[in-house]
Length: 334
Image (cartoon, rainbow, N blue to C red; front, side, top):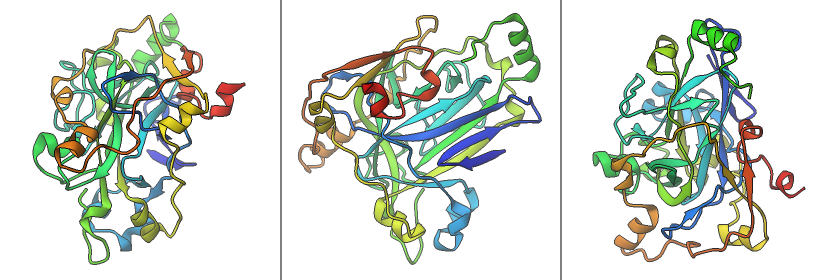
């Protein structure tokens, strides 16, 4: 089952194991400059608000009502990262517009090992973007669906799904109990209706480069209970559409990376020396970034995209991993 609790998705599988549960949240963050430099991890600026689509069914198109899930608002060119919290092992697939964020392949309802198209929890504490090289991702950045910029449109030529898709598969109970006993694991969308225009729907495109590893699965496909996966769609709309659908004001715009760096506030780095990183996707590495698309389309340079100096990098290890990059800047400044 999937529960929505305080703007977080909680996946629970009591029929598999009493401990089989994980939390996934979508963090607002700085959009890092798309200047060819590999930046450290930006901070978490709070979770995106999430609302059940069913609560606003009368205001939504049939396609959205049929697929269900949750709704979230994003400003154009705003960035996000995904936080994973779990002690129980999970294999989690993430797609944008039904394009796998790790391999660039079309969505399929199963796990693949060659190449690996999923993240392994709890080893993987977060995912900030598309896995393009070993140790490098390109940040998830929101753009309007239908303009040709999303990963979905660049790879398929169509603007159909948008948003995010997440599926979680728990580890088989027998394998988990085996590993626990042996002490081998650590505790640690096109939108359409008479009321709304198609440009209200949002998708994700690759942004700036960031240092982040997506870890290899040490357990193998047989460890995961693929009969009991749960999937959730996260539909993205712009802030005006959010107000029209929910009647709520969207969050304030996040600060720019330049403003944040000028304040001397921390960025982050995470390293797990025991884990092996995936090599990255050639398909995803060839996608045009948001800044490149803006230049090619004649819109000029992407706003707030100038180079910045990173004043302070805080090293994170396994102990704080389950808490994301850090839930508040204040915690990092103490």
